Length: 245
Image: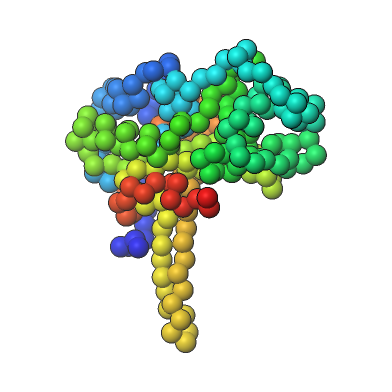
């Protein structure tokens, strides 16, 4: 349970951020921008990182020429207008799916447990695609530990993903991985009559959304933001712990 509510916090992006190539060291890129700006991470900071650059660093790229669509993918492609190779990847990365409307988008239950548009797959032009990190919570822990070693600051890390929702147009930002921070914020209060009511908030989603105001969507060019002054409980259970598996 949180010790106190957050009454104010600040946020800033790390930019200009270098272009990340497959296999690049994200921590080197983050500390390089911090040094160039003359900014230091502080204990308690929350570093929010876009999942796309994590996938790039972890070499999660797929060449669509290597993907052979099956019958179900071809059928869904005809209905939605999505390339059959992308649809096949969605099917491969998910355990279940449905169409939000007659022509899509495809809402898929990713193998990790997240419900995501297109199973979180990010197209790269007409020839490639990026898959989500294999284990976003593990990726967040690795980033947190490496940042602590590089900067000496005790920070939390949230991996954020841009995602559409099935009930509305447009995209929002949610968390898919976290380290050093409890993914749920739990509060309790006593109602008249003495009954205690427990309330859970998907806290890392709230933080991802707050950072998303700065990170923006495709083409924004700022894949990392820092939130400072947020009160939170330190925890390593990760986003996976709050999913309905």
